[in-house]
Image (tube, rainbow, N blue to C red; front, side, top):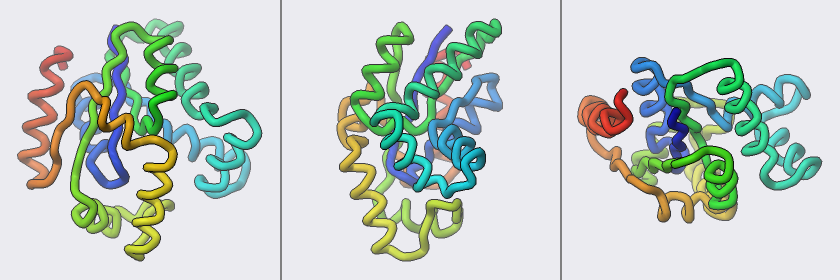
Length: 179
C-alpha cells in the first residue's frame, strides 16, 4: 500500500495528476475537498471554513482530518494507491510521514502567469480573475509553507506546455508506482 502526496501552487496542475491517477485506479483524497465538505456542513465559504477550523482545532486540522479519512479507507480494506492532493506545509508532510511508511511528495510547477490564466478559466470558488487577488492568494500559500514542501519534494514535474505533454509526464511518473 502506497500513500503519496501532490503539492503545487494553485493552477499548477495537481488535479490533472489526480484525474489521470484516478483513471488508473488510485484513490484521491483532496485536502481542499475536505475543507469544502466542512464548509458545506457549516454553511460557510471554504476560505472562511479553513480559517475557522484552524482557529478552533489548530493549524494542522486539515491534515489530521485527511489522515483520519485515509486510515478509514485502509481499515475498510482499500488496497489501491492513495494520493493526497493539496499538501501545503512541511509540518503536514511530517504528519503524513509519521502515519504512512515511505510517504512520497510529488510537486507540480508552472509559472505564475500561466497558472493565473488557468485559474481564470477554471473559476472555482477560490479562483479570481483579478491578478492582485491571485498574487495575494499565492502569498498566503507561501506564508503557510507550500514553498518549503515544493522545495523538499521527492520529485517535480514541470507543467508549462500542452496538456498532452503533461499527461505523458504524469503517466511516466505513475509507472514508478505500477499505475
